[in-house]
Length: 134
Length: 134
DNA sequence: GGAGGGTTAAGGAAAAGTGTTTAAATTTGC
DNA sequence: GCAAATTTAAACACTTTTCCTTAACCCTCC
Image (cartoon, rainbow over all chains, first blue to last red; front, side, top):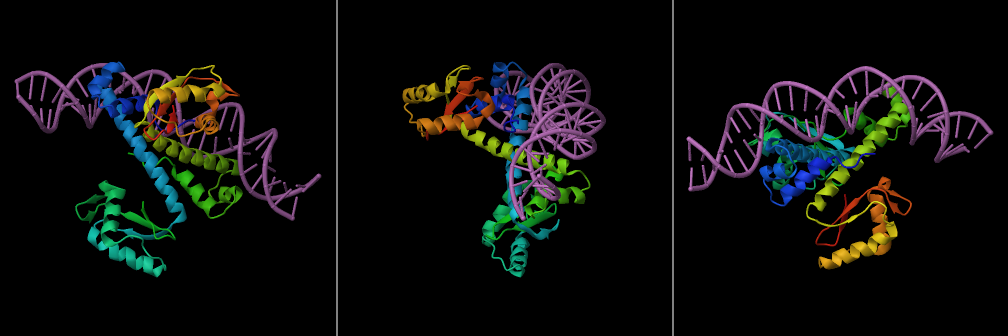
């Protein structure tokens, strides 16, 4: 069974990067082009993001689907919608309005632009009132 | 870019599993063999484990290289070697001898056979005295 | 306008991962 | 011990990822 998601090459680049080396310097050390170092680093960061998303998904297994934030919705309208749906389910959302909006935006920044939802966002809630977005 | 590590098939199986269905029942629902459901579920769990390992690795970025356990080394000799190196760095290892050996073996079982190191193992330590192996 | 740092695109070869089947274990619950 | 549930292995087609090269493009700071 394979190890983590990151290849040796990707780990190597991340380590050098952490040490503050430039892509050019790393390219010289590992004998390749700086363009290659860039793509390897990019792939590494994508893999890390994927690992995070994967574990996020596990929470949705315990959670039930609460509602969908439809594309075009005003982000500021989301909390009351979510609170109302949670109420119906007899659940109390763990977050206040501000925190909720921040969590929402942080969950997947590219799905929002300004105050608008760009793509449908599924909202899940578990028994602890934790919210997850997918 | 792709989402998490889990394929739609894998998520599907995990969801049904969470609901308490057997592999046979799932096989019927998704029109395939139970053996296949097993394989898919196993792959899903492996992917989750890989996601965890991947994030674990990020800790090693804060860590420095402590030493290398050379192929052929007696596993029981590893702790004193590691303690000595940590001493040189002015760091205190967080684990006692037994725990250390267990962590070492658990980190990547296939790299050890019995008491012997089969492949070189790199040892990293962070400021908290946590050890990581790569 | 350069220089230095970073990114992107196109293309290719090798490696790894996925879903499947079939058939043979192995484990678990009465 | 039986039957159901689960796991494993081998093999195959298919898709995706990885690493690499080359060549270009975008910033920012002199």
